[in-house]
Image (cartoon, rainbow, N blue to C red; front, side):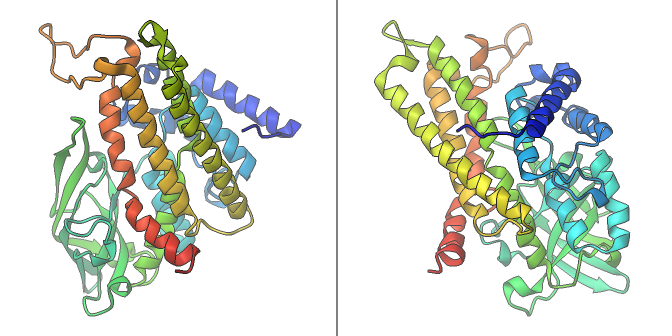
Length: 395
């Protein structure tokens, strides 16, 4: 899909493209996945963008953001995808940050927002629990008021990168007698607080990205409550709307399809490039058609946001289709690479982890396994269909 840009937009695009080319850390280009990166590696691009003042394109200027318009944000996403930069962590910038500047008090804004922008505070998300994932409102982690503190007991699971986190934004049950959604509060927790244990979960791709977090008599200042007590479900839905919109990943899927085409042009079937076989061409064409339709939907959502309307239930459509497309791309990439995609993580005799085959096969199987989770996090796609049925179609 081609979008017509004004001269001002084209100038902005050129500025963004040049800045990325000149300032993106060169060593990050050699890292194929986040699993190969340490904490400082993950934060490297974030810090470059913070210094430039470009780390929060969608934040209001009064809180340190760029407050870019829809077209500028679209260009920003496209150019980062084109350059294959590492995505910034969403937990502070796209999730808790907007919650704080929308629902937090002035002291909370002054305390937390600058450190989110600078990357000084690394945030993790305390939502899912054992038995309370898609049915998040059934969560059982309790926060009991004791004077000027809350005493929190419970556990969270699938907590992404909690091993590095300084803070957690956590959903806790503060009124056990209320209806499920009406008895939940949104509380910020310092991860250095006594009583917190982080235990790694090693996923099927062999990586340590997610964790279990146990909270035992964790005492948190009551001033860390966001908004009103027992109104946390409202803030949680606001946050999830932002998260689901971002999960769509249209620009990066476009880049991934380009990469897939390159691979399919190099691999052969009976002496013919895979990309020229009718069946594989059809699969790629189906992907591109669906991705183009998703891009139109994303642009309509962005246009709605530019008029002051926050991401609503329509973001569930972006989440479902975006993650399905991402999974289909990884499936086709495994198919294209063939036997070179065989998952092989064990070190070789010389201590290296190199695998046989072309460089483009590196990490393909790990990425395939890792992307299986996209249909689950941010609210499973089954739950998103329920949201669409009720809130969009009125069924």
